[in-house]
Length: 494
Image (cartoon, rainbow, N blue to C red):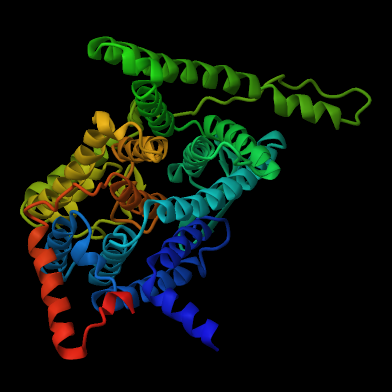
C-alpha cells in the first residue's frame, strides 16, 4: 500500500512521468489506423498535466524557480487573451491547443531546482533509448515496405492517410514525412552516444551493454536509410545543421584545440564542420541512388515466370512536384496567406487553430513556418515573449559552450549533442511547425530537452536574471507563508 501511495505521489509530482508519457502517446497518434482513439489518449497528457500544474505550486514550484519562466508565463497569458478576443474562431480547438501549450511550457520544460545533473542525464537516457529502439523498429518496417513497394492509402474524416511507398517517397509507418521521426531517432542515438562517452570518460571501468552496442549503430543506419528515402529537404537540411553544430563544438573543445590560437581554432572547427555536413549530404545522395536498384533486384528473386516480363532495373526516387508549387513545394503561397492574416490582426493574432484545414493549393494543418505561425497565432505581442524566451535560451547555451571554464565538465559532450538537436528542430521549424502550437512528438521533445539543456548549463555561480527574480521572490513568499502556517517543514521536500 505504501508503494502505491509513493507511486501515485511521484506520478502527480514528478514531471518525468509526464514527459515520458507525452512522448509515447504522441508517437501513437502518428501510427496508422490510430486516428479514432489516439487523440483521446493524448487527453491523458492534458489531464495529468493539469494536475501537475496545480500540485507543482504546492510542492516543487518549478514554474516559479526555473529559468526564463516569466517569459513563458507572459506568452501563455497573451495566448489566452488572443483566444478570448477571437472566441468566434474555433474556440474549442484553440483552447485545446492552448492547454497543450500550458502543459508543454509549464510541466515538460521546467526541472526541479533540487534535481542533479546526473539524475537529469539518467532521465535523458530513458527517453533516448525509447526513441532509438522505437525508431529502429519503425524504420526497419518502413524499409521493408520500400523493398516490397508496399503502398496503402485510406480516408478517415475526409482526410487522406498514406503508409508505405507512395508517390516516389517513403512514408513508411508514420504516414507523414513532416514528422521527421527517423531524423529525430538519429539525433537521439548521437545524444546517447555522447552520454556513454561521458560515462566512459568519468569511469574507465564502465562497460556498455552488448545489446546497446548493437542497437545504437543499427538505429543510426536504418534511420539514415529511411530518412533519405523520405526525400524531405527540410529534414536533410536539419540533420546537416545538427551535424555542423555537433562537429564544430566537438573540435572546439578537443585537446588539440586547447593549445591552438583562437582564430585558428575557429577556422579549423568551422571548415571541418562544414565539410562534414557536405560529405554527409553527398553520401546520402549516393546511397539514395543506390537504393533505387534494390526493389527490382529483390522482386526478380521472387519472380517465378519462365519468361519474365521486362521491368525497369530501378524505381523512381525523385519526387514529382507540380510546377505551380515551385522549389519550396507551395510554402511561399502558404506564407503569403499567413502574413496577410497577420496584417489583419497584428497585435494579438487569431489563435493557432483558427485557420486549420485551410485550403491553399491543398489542405494545410499549419503554416509550415514557425515565425509565420506564431505571428498569425498570437500576433506581435505574444511572439515577442516566445521569441525572446527562445533567444535567451539559445544565447545561454552557446555562451556556456564557448566558455573556457566549462570545457572540463563531464556533461559537456551531452550538452553539445542536445544543443545540436535543439538547433536541428529550430532549423526544421522554418519549413514546418516543429516546436510549438501542435501536440507533436517534436514539440514535446524540443521543450523537454531544452529544459534539460538549461539545467546542464547551470552552475553554482550563476545568478537568476532580473526578469526571473520577481518569481523567485514570490516563491520565497509562499515558502515563508507555509512556514508560518504549518511549521518548519518545507512543503517542497515533503
